[in-house]
Length: 350
Ligand SMILES: C[S@@+](CC[C@H](N)C(=O)[O-])C[C@H]1O[C@@H](n2cnc3c(N)ncnc32)[C@H](O)[C@@H]1O
Image (cartoon, rainbow, N blue to C red; front, side, top):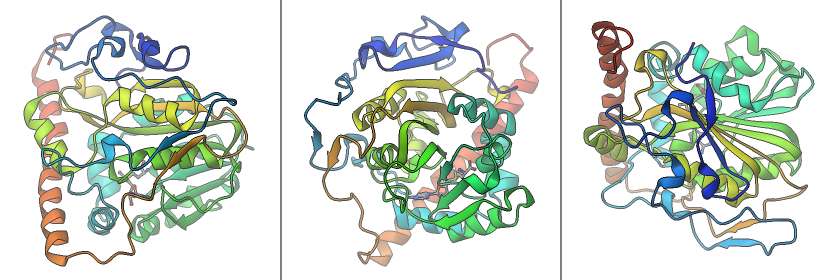
């Protein structure tokens, strides 16, 4: 089993009264930042609270530009949180993605644990997997849903090529597209799933708003993604590489997009023994239910990144290289944690 499969509410209601719920492992309740690097209960954090989710009659929310977390301050350049860099990153990573990257960060038991709140238990559900890549998460979806009802979308043709080779995904509609601008009509799907993709979106709030739009009323969005490290070195490399949101940021984005019953479940590889101080590339599964038919009540300004605009090749190359070097740190972290797990006696903190 993956770590942290048993959960209880941990008091995030303070962020979005009556709406947002964070589910944390039972054993973690009430802890401040421990040696294991566990975050405080969210209600006790100092971050500004998200406002209440927009009700049907409430005025439409407006944000003039990309949400705050999508901005890249000098201290957090997030070199690969760009569509072009992400495209080239996966041009090469797709070659080893399933065999080298996933076993360290995104195991089958973690995936099944993370998909559980998506409530996929009907073969007839219409499901979209956004940023579906090589189809690793889609394989978890088609365990429950007929492949003919599933659409896998990704911006990387190289990742999609790997998905097309998977026998279990025959029948799935596999297509190129952008998570922030989904090529589907409003009110189309029963379930929206996206795993490990948000970290590359220049404007995560826009992607979550799109999730809301394409779902049918009562449909569930399940977004699986990284969590921000607390250990200084891990935080440094995370900030150089891509977006590692804080748990409360996920809740804020979902709530602002208009979702109700927003919940967050922590996930992690079992050999981490619940340690979260290094951040986790797949660290949580956030779900929300579409409240009403139609588009999200949130209105946004222009897209943060226009992929059709030419980029300076030197700047691009520098960002790509730096981002890739910093990403390499996160190949080493699970190996380090695995060695610790082997050495430290079972039942003791690592
Ligand atoms: C870490 S992989 C996750 C793949 C898959 N969901 C899984 O569970 O293994 C991230 C994927 O997100 C895709 N991606 C990044 N930015 C995207 C965007 N703006 N629109 C669509 N896909 C995107 C990448 O091409 C890549 O395949």
